[in-house]
Image 1 (spheres, rainbow, N blue to C red):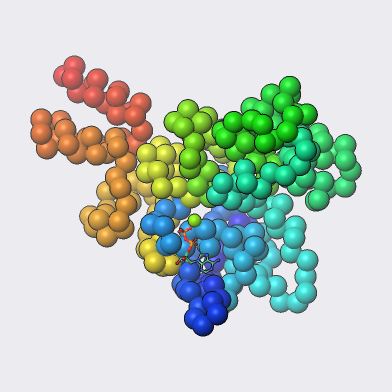
Image 2: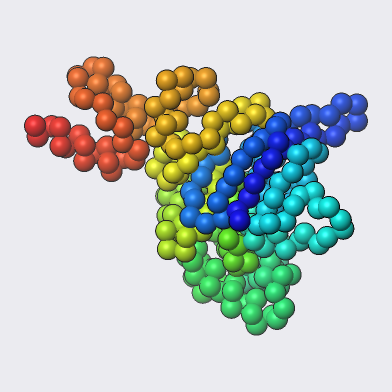
Length: 282
Ligand SMILES: Nc1ncnc2c1ncn2[C@@H]1O[C@H](COP(=O)(O)OP(=O)(O)O)[C@@H](O)[C@H]1O
Ligand SMILES: [Mg+2]
């Protein structure tokens, strides 16, 4: 099933003119097992694109099909349930926390979609556990914890709805390195142990290179690359995408040029270090 975009364009309506945000996008995402990064400069249309994945925005032209539901819908159908199937964590989601206690905040989503309070609570507890929010915090106000923890509470609120696809719009932005890594470890484990499809918008090429398998590049509202990360970073015209190279690849290119270490792409620091150990013993 998954999500398909067929020639999708969207423009924001202004008073005098409209602002084209994405144009003629064709795209197929599997509902299970993918780890995809969406990258591109600020204003390239990333946030607009992902808001089509759970019907927060409806295409001006073309169509999106989300788990079999066509968008825009042909007749007046209820499409709210898509927000449960495709969970979207916005940029700076902690600004949307509002309940008195952390547990209530995480319960808000499942309460809206599932019937009973008890059911919602058990889903919220499970989600809180996944993101590592300790039980002793459940009754505290979400506004009295650290930024990194607030971000986790916000992610738990989406996870509690048990979405099949998890879309994360710059989830690590503004976090310190440890907070960043902790959060990425949670997403990786959701992907590996539960087979959830993760769609990650990020400017951090080191994270993209370490975690994503497939990368989609947007440029001025157009999709300009969709494929394996290996093919993106080794693309002969990589500069045209205006992206930064991941640090391990930068180091390896530099070492090849300066001291002749044979270039072999490595996508994270651990593999870079093992490779350097290997060649230094030869
Ligand atoms: N609410 C809005 N009203 C008008 N224009 C917008 C709005 N949101 C985004 N845009 C414009 O749409 C384009 C794509 O924006 P966006 O999807 O937010 O890009 P990104 O997430 O890649 O930074 C940009 O030119 C941006 O200025
Ligand atoms: Mg954005």
